Length: 347
Image (cartoon, rainbow, N blue to C red; front, side, top):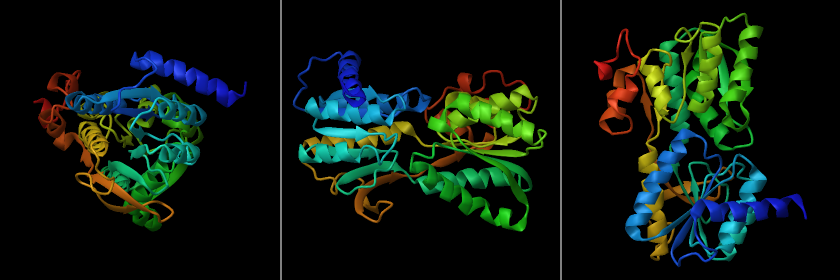
């Protein structure tokens, strides 16, 4: 048996365990392939989706690719075989799954690229303005540290979304680089965005630069968690500016404590709801270019692709009240351990 066949068999077995369903899927079912479900935010996205599907009496079938592109391709094949009507895919490696995307299309299964772009037409892309995500990240960090030694801790280079974030970041900071106000003393790519990988890389950067680092442009909150751990080991946490994205609760608490500068809040409740509602509309007969909120878009290669794009928000100590008021995080959790110089949201 080939490695791919073994992964496919394992994926089908895992899928049955995750869903608790028999091999027969209800007529109206949506399959969701998560690239790496251990990230905190995906659980929020999933809960929002399930709420919509439950109300519409649509079955949810979810499976975790565990950061493995080959397993994700096998997962998607298993979802196709189970007869789902719509596939929502958070791509680990968008190029690697193009063949199975084409298989889904041949079975008249509509594909929604969720939060990570897939460079093919006839796919609905639902995400945030990811160039803006990178830009507001860079702007907020530049405001906090307009001069000094910076470190770029980027995401997994296998994921095309990383370059989109990067382009936005550089829109914000390139001018300061050109003037010599900020200097990138290191740039690292974090495989699968894992915090333990980020921590090890950041420890190496600190050693190589004698701890002379003023800001870390961390591309998401998982990476920021690893960076924070490395800084804490050198008694630098709270002394070095850190960016992030996703609005993870522990990161918001770190912002309230003055230990992280900002995170980009992409309301996963809103995105999960939008994608799930689009899937329900498609099941009811809507075309992908006519679902609620859709607008024309293009892929990286220039192909036409309908998209639903939401706006991100930079969260700093000054506007932490937004995430509390929205119900994203409780005040108790946000302000846990905040003893000195509390932000307004914790007063």
